[in-house]
Length: 585
Image 1 (spheres, helix red, strand yellow):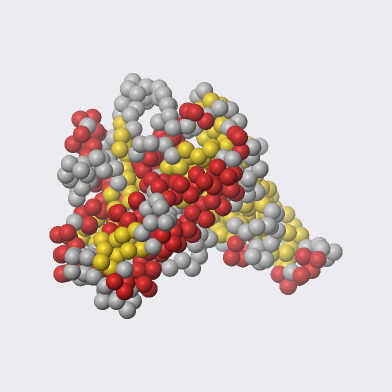
Image 2 (cartoon, rainbow, N blue to C red):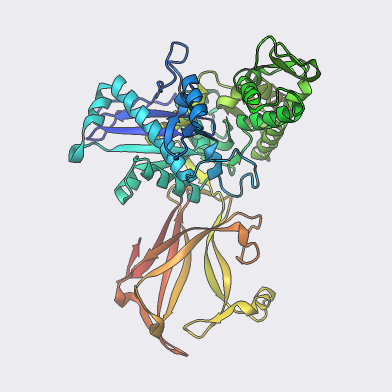
């Protein structure tokens, strides 16, 4: 169990974490009060989830209704109420779900057929609408349950106390996806589009947030000896995130990422996706193949049939109608559709097979006696999933644990523990990072000869080959939060061609997602290179060197690109020497 110190700041502060999931989302908050030990608390009350049996729900559905004018009409649990659905049918509103998966990187599940978004609205605006709704619900809950929280939220104008935010995202997401989430956060009103606003927004991967939750709540106490390995498997609605850490110190618990984390789009929603396809095919010639019947079947499958499935030798049942709804040709009796064990297994198998392979990759090369698997997340409660994985782990000589308690709130609360007390001291570089550059032409180099048509003459008169790639940090490198990676470059500018911002230097930061260890050319696999950002600086005018070239004088300035990859967000800087002092921006 993690023990926090009293907050040492001089001003009160509110921190809100939001976990937008594919099928369900959650939020948590923490009030930092000077001299008091911070407490992490989940938002446990959302509109549409009132009632004794649902009053402690920590999750709401990730769904929205828009009317025919693309105006937002209902969100979350309110969108699932019978009255809302009746009005949606009458008014022909459009139902939006799984919008999060439309934001995934192109490299994850390329070509996947997802539920379409049939509203004339960019997916970023849909995410912003959803974030704004969760924030509104969170603020209402905090005001109603915490006097200090209400006081913080009631302050306005110049005296308003700042709110910090932590947003979680799947392991496979990086710079471009974080950028999109930033834009959505600004549109939703979480933060302003300024340096100050951006400083109040942090990101954490779902895998690392789950680890922080497990450490904070004591779920890893029995396996936190030094040099042990723990693989966190966060089984969610859309994604399954795997992260493996080595325990560096046990008191206090400190870990470092030891393997590149993985993200599978094989969560519980994919089982629903396969189930719907199975039902539509199975019943295509039946009178029970209407959209209304299929939707009713899927609702019961999701809430009852799927969560309790355990025995592949037994029949499973989906309730969708009344006693008069019978068609024995399709195994439908008195409003129940029967699915055989093999049919149910076929729905789970792709997710389970992919997960087994991913776990094997994560623990490859480790002493299995020192490794343990922790299964968390809503999908982890599936008895069939657990039984299948446990059998696989036993065959591999691995220990697997499924902690009791509400691990479905692990990501939202874990994101706050990440904010309060980092336990991860080193992380693994997700990709190979570098910059676009030109290299001196070597007529004896076959790669240069092959690109002779790509040569140019620079201002100094040298023949250069374009489309080269300068590696700054290789994929798989373990880096601490303060590790700097540098690449030395230089800018040549013909004075006659200079216009605009004459003193600016700049360079691109690019990630490579292919299989090569040391990629050297961007034209070999152009689809594997992705521009992340451009760094720019303006050195003092007198720090530029003026040199003579074949076409006249030109200006020259050396500089470094600096990358910091040990944080949950990549940071890029540009650095140069000026008056014998290093400057960076």
